[in-house]
Structure formats: structure tokens, C-alpha cells
Length: 444
Image (cartoon, rainbow, N blue to C red; front, side):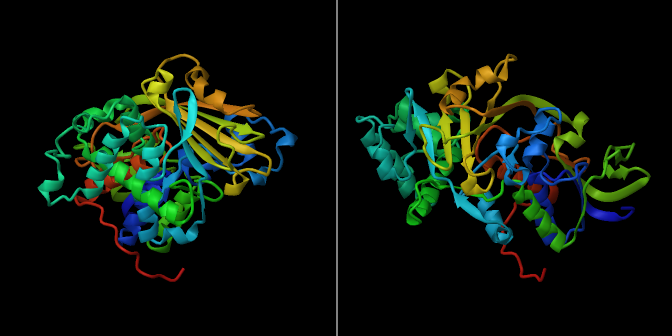
């Protein structure tokens, strides 16, 4: 460990492991340290015993739940959309060859007390009950606007500037009502709350296009949902990127305490990391917020509940599903997300389903009360494990001290915000945008 590196990375969460792999492929000498004896950090996948150790003070799981090895339960369950940025990184870096994926059976949304399938195409959306009769021609015009948009052709812009005009203005220009806005913004663009309406429309329009393209690929493959999921849990994602890093210049040290982040006294710039009596030096350090408690601020809390079921969610009746509860439907300020997985994804034994619920905490009361609307949809719950975690962001961008800190994982059921954080960190670290290039062939 007493060596000099280009980059030291602390924590093996997905964000950190993606950067480890990307930087190692670019030729950087990387030292990757984790205080835990497993990969994944807060996005690890746990077996049954580990789950009970974490949430039930080390109690033994009931024998009726089956064998330990049959469980790979995600602490932070998220699905991948076929066209999203993380999937592109998996393909371009060839990390995808370390993984096997399973299609999620269905994506659904709560609307006026009933559960509806989220349409997979614009045509399906226009025949869905989620869009009112009078709104259908207006929604068709909006979808055609996105389909025909050409960046270099102002005639296709309908007088709108997606980089400057808000999403609220775009909705207004097409006379889309609250129900249609909710469907587009929350079921397709997967926005967590309605604050997106005050931001430039580019973000949401790009997400709608990504959803439509992903859904089209799913339809070509005769699948009803644009979402996919890695077999054996999300914990394999950071491990796959760690493997990529190790193939190149990455060195990994698990179960290694970080006793001190060594910084220069004159300007606070990063010098190295001390573990015991050893110090590893580097120009740059990257890490999750847990390693830099004095350099981050709390911006909220996320409520998560892991539920073991003996039958599928009644409204879904599938081996896997996503259900979105838009904020307006539950009287909250943030959406609630439900993910449900089963034996088909190799995360639990036959006869079990793992449903997870997540949202942003809005009160200081019992977390279960905030997700009560979602829990009612699950049917009988065999076991439930509820957590309430703080969400952190860095106090500075790190460019003056070379200390680059990732953001905590949010409550969404997808990875787009993780990929945005990876791109932002890469830009701050290297001074250039992340450009995906096909990984050169290697012998492992």
C-alpha cells in the first residue's frame, strides 16, 4: 500500500466502481479501498443471514424462509432501462459480458385508485385510460413533436427552445392537462417530483425519448417492459466494473480501514490515505460520502422497505414488476416506487417474491406511515425491513483540493441519476466530458 498512485478510490459502490473501471481503462494507476469485506457498499446485495444481521440485530432467519444461498436481496433496488446511459457504459466497456440480464415483466402506475400498465409505445399511450379522450390528440401532437425534433432544423421546434423554456411551458404550448402531464413526467420520464416542470425542458424531453426508444427495443424483443435487471442482484454490477478495473491497472483492498484522509495543511489539497501505519499517496481521491463526513451536507432522507412476500403483487400478477405511485395520487410531494422481483431473477427461492418500496421522507414520523399507500398494494407481507437513510451531497466540487465525493443514492427505481453523477465527477476530475469508446480487447 505504501506506493504512489494516480487515483485512490474509497468505497465500492456502483458510482465508485464505474469510475474505477473507466479510469483504469484510460491507463490511470488506481488503488481501490473499501472498509467492508464485500463489494457494493450501500448498493450491495445481501443473503438472508446478512439481511437479518443488518436489520434484526443479528437474529437468525426463520427456517421457513429457506436456504441462505438462495437470496440476493438488494439494499437499493433499481431497474435498468435498455436505452439509458449505464447500459451504454456496460456495452462500450464490455462489462456486459460479466453479467446476465432478465427482462422485467411489467411497469405500472397508480391513477385514481387503480393500477394501469404504463404504455410501451406512443400508439399504446393514446389508447390507454391514462390519457383522457380529449387529451389524446394533444398528446399525439406532443409525441410527434418529440419524434420529429431535429436540433439543426428550427422548423421542427414549434417556437420552443428546450434548453431555455421550462417543461411547464412545453406542456402549456400543447395544452396538456394535469393527468397527461403526470403520465408523461412520472410514468415515462420517471421524475421524482413536480419540481422538474420549472427546469429547462431538455431533461424531461430526453427522458421521454429514451423511454420511447427503450420501449421500442423491448417491443421488438416481444417484451412488455423496457426495464431489465441483472440476475443474482445489483451487487454484481459494481463487482463487474471492479473486475474491469483489475484487468487493467486497478488494485483492490477490501476489509481495509481508512484511518485518515491526509491533506496538505497549507491548502487542504489531497495527499494520501492512511490505514494503520501505511500511507498510499495519489494526486486524486474519489469516494462516497461516508468517507468524508465533514465535507458533505445532508439534503434529505430516503425511506426504503424490503418486503418478503409469498405471492406476487395482486395488481401485477407477474414474476417481476415496477409500480409508480405519482405524488399527486397519494397527496405527497414525491413519488413512491415499488419494485418486485422473484426466482426468475435469481434473488430468492421459488415461492417467494421480494418487493421493495422507496421514497423521499417528508416527515419526522414513522417511515411506514409515509409508504402506507404502497404497502397496501403488496398484499400479505411475510417479513418487512424498513430503513431511513440520510442523503448527502458534497460541499464543493473538489477541483481545488482534488477530493471528489459522490452523491448518495436517491429514491428512484432507475439508474439515470447515478450515471449523471458519474459523468459529472468524471468531468470535474479530468476537465473533459465522458466519451464512451469501445473497450480494446484484452486477455483475462
